[in-house]
Length: 303
Ligand SMILES: Nc1ncnc2c1ncn2[C@@H]1O[C@H](COP(=O)(O)OP(=O)(O)O)[C@@H](O)[C@H]1O
Ligand SMILES: [Mg+2]
Image (cartoon, rainbow, N blue to C red):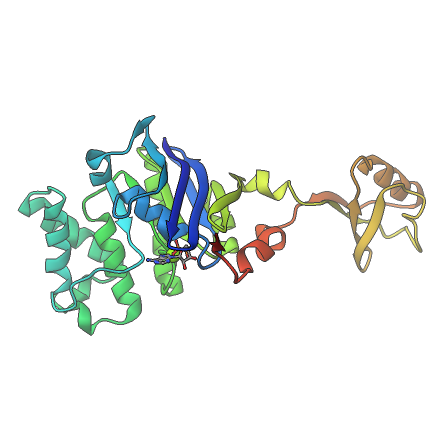
C-alpha cells in the first residue's frame, strides 16, 4: 500500500538514506526501528513531502504519493510544532479545520481526542503551561484530530508516561483494525515494537537491514529448545550431534541446536532415562537478536 522505494538522501558529506526500501500494508502496525541517526525521521519527512529525496520514490497504491494522499495522513513530526501561546482546545480545532473539517466537526473532534488522551481538563490552557507529557498528548491529538486513515508517527512514545503509552497503544490498534490505511511509527525500542507491531523494519545507516513479521524476525535467531527432564544427568547431550547446552535452570535445560540437529533426538534421549515435563521451542526476542544493530551509536556513512 505505502511503498518506500530506493530512497537516497545526503546532507553534504553524510549519506542519510541509501536505498531505503520497504512497504507498509493496509491494516497493519509497522514499527520502524533503529538507533539515533539511522534515517527514520528523514524517511518520514520524505514521505510527507516536507523534504525532497535525492533519489527513489514513495508510492501509495502503486502511484507516486501526492498531496491528496498526504492530506489523509496523520503525521506526528519529530520537531513538535505546537503554538506555545495558544490554548490546547483552540489549537486542535485549528488543525482540524486546516484539514478541511467544518467548524462544528472540528470542535467535536478536538473535544473527543482531548478526552481520549486525558487532556480534557487542559482545553483552556496554553501549551506553554503543560508538562512535557501533556504536550506530547496534545501533539498526538493534532495528528489524530482530522480522523486520518493513515498514521505516520515519528517517535510517538518518546516522553509518554506509562498511562499515556497505554492509551496510544490502544489507539494504534484500533486504527489498524479499522483497516483503512496502515499505521507506521518509529522507535528505538525493540521491546515496544515486538509487543505492538505486526511487522517491523530494522533500519541502520540509512537502509532497512531486515523486515518482516515479528515471528519471521524471531525465527532468524538460533534454534533453541527448552526441556524439563528431571531424569537426565551429567553431560547427557554429549552424544547428540549439534546439540549444545546453553544454560540449565534446575531440571530445565535450554539447548541450542545447530543446523540440521534433530530436536526429536533430544526428546528421545531424555525420555529414555525419565519423564519429560516440558519440551518447547524457544525463540529469541527481538531485543536479544537486534539489540547490537539498534544500540550502535555510530550512524550515518561519510561518503
Ligand atoms: N538537517 C540535517 N543536516 C545534516 N545532517 C542531517 C540533517 N538531518 C539529519 N541528518 C543526518 O542524517 C542522518 C539520519 O538522521 P535522521 O533521519 O534524523 O535519523 P533518525 O530519525 O533515525 O535518528 C544522521 O546521520 C543525521 O545526523
Ligand atoms: Mg528521528
